[in-house]
Every structure is written in C-alpha cells, then in structure tokens.
Length: 114
Length: 273
Image 1: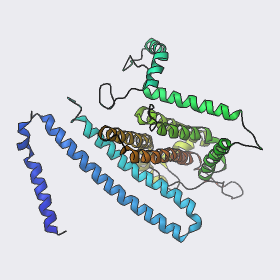
Image 2: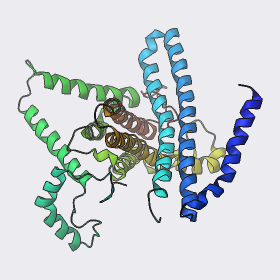
Image 3: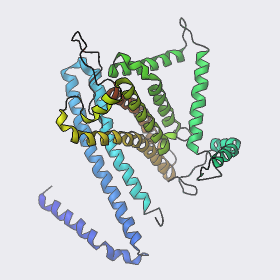
Image 4: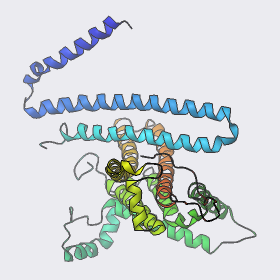
C-alpha cells in the first residue's frame, strides 16, 4: 500500500477522533460518556496490538524451534519443552493486556458511576 | 464482575445446597471472629464449594484406587495414575536433579488441582474455581512461599539471601543494581503466575458466556474445545514454572567437592519471568 494512502487514512482517523465531542452532545453528555467511549476504543486497540505482537513473537519461537529440531532430531524432547515454555510465557503477556482491556471495557461503560 | 444481579451471575444448585447445609455454621463461626461477610446469605463463596468438591472427589477416588492396588494385575486406572506420577517425577528429576522427587507432593497436587479446576468450568452445573482471582492468587502464593522456604532449607538463610545480591555468574560489584531487580522479579513471579492462570480461565469462561448469550446452539463448541486445550496447558505450565522456580532456589549452589567433581545438577533454567 503506498505511503500516501496510509498517511491519508491515519489523518482521517485522527481527525475523526478530534471531532467526536461534536457528536456527543445529543447524548446525556457528561464526562463519563467521554471516558466510556475512549475506554472502549483503547481496549480494542490495546488488545489488537498485543495480539499481533504476541503472534509475531510466537511465530519466531516456533520457527527457530522447528529449525533446531530439523538440525538435531535427537534433542527434540528438550527443544519441545523449551518451545512450550517460551510460547506460554509470550502468551501470558497478551493475557495481561486482555485483563487490562477487560477492566477498561467494563469499568466505565458498564460500571455505572465508578 | 459476576456480582449479584449482573447478567453474568449464575447460581449453582450445588452452591446453594452447600450454603443451606453448612451456611449457618460458617456464618456463626465467621461472625464470632469478627469476619465481614460480603454476602451474608451466601457465606461460603461458590469457588470454595467447588474446591471442596475437588477435594472430596480426589480423596474418594484415591481411597477407592488404594483398596484395589495390585502389582501383578493392575487395572487401567492404576496404570494411568502410575504414568502420571512417573511423568511428574521425571519432570522433577530432569529439572532439579536426583533430589527433585522430594518436592513431588505439593507440585503434583497443585497440578492436579488446577487441571481439575480448569475442566470443571466446562461441566454444566459447576464453575471453575480457578476463574476466581482468589483461588489463583492462593495457588501462586503457596508456591512462592514454598520455593523460598525450600531454598532457605537447602542452602541456609545467609547464602540464600546472598544469591539475591549476587546471582551466580554476576560479579559482586553489580550487587546494588542486582538486588532491587531480583526482588522485583521475584515479586512479579507471584503476579505472573496468578494472573496468567486467572486470565486464561476467566477469559475463556467470559467468551463462552457471551457466546451463549448470543447464539447458544452450536457456536460455543469451538471455544469450549479451546477451553479444554488451554485448561490442560495452563495446569502443566503452572506445574512446570513451579519446578523451575524450585530449581532456581534449591539447585543453584553446587560447589566442587574435595575431589573436584561437580555435584549433580539439573538443567540450566531459562531466565523465566
């Protein structure tokens, strides 16, 4: 995708973010609605970035483990153990982001007057 | 989050039954010591009832199998259990060395408890106790206190505390930097153990609950299959990390003895967070 179209898309999204207070005025616009909206957006983006980066990292782990097993099939048991441990440690970072996203998602939008 | 009145709250008849039978006793005992119950109509929380259920089932099955143990003619379940015990013992000896088998009771029990706890979430009428942060924090704190205690017992309190300042391989000059880093990393082990298990089980359960509220017919099945995979994996990983932390605490200091041979040791642990 060309650099110019990427830049245009980002600018349009950023402009939309700046102009949202205009649309919020027909709701019972208190500060809570604003925080609730931003909470949901943040939760979605945080989880998307975390899942993407965790997937990249896990892909690298699996790739190097497969290569190591191909080079040295006798050590397959040990390599598989290290691989499993590494995959779970990477995944737990994405799980931490999931927990924060859940907190963000439920605290202001559905938590009432927290 | 699953509080009374919220759409995610779900009352289980086994919890209501246990509270009907044991509730007044627990309420009276708790109020006698001044404990504040957050919901006096349900003094035994639902995860405690599930934990009691796990304990009863494991005890009953264990006693039943013990009465039928046989060396020449073992039944299928006995073979399965022996394989399981052998696998845990093999894991301990692979990571910690020949003395590893003495830590098997707590590690194997914790692994079995978490495995059964995760799978109880998939059974209708039961909930997974590990989907409550209280239970996972309890498991993590137990393992944390246990491995520090075993480390002090194996090495003596002086040498053990010195390892925080100067891990083997780091020169003594780095001690002022290593000490806070080591302390923070040990504290973060509690958080990471508990949050990893809690996040996996609770997140799985939340997704299944939401899918049930949207399309209850066939769509939750793939997520429940994923729940089976991650439940077993998380129990195994909790056990494996406990073994690695034990190895870090116990098997670190192996000096050469007077003949110049290294003491036997297990694998080098990766820098597990």
